[in-house]
Image (cartoon, rainbow, N blue to C red; front, side, top):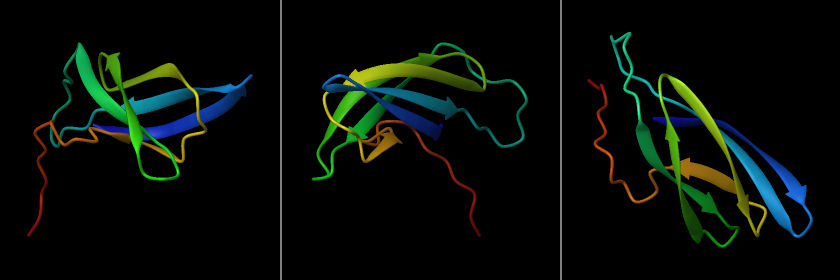
Length: 88
């Protein structure tokens, strides 16, 4: 899973953050459904708030409201997902 992009819009004293994610699987055309992934919304001091995003298929998006302007949004901030990589 990866964060494809995110868009921040100020909403009064809060911020609406629309996060777009994608699911990747090398050599596969079928993607999992009912995905639940944690997102970390990071503050400038590197602390973060966790939120849960759910989606099915290859891509998904969801809008969250936070009380700060996030510096970045990362997926799986506490590294709870099983990750696989291809390397030499």
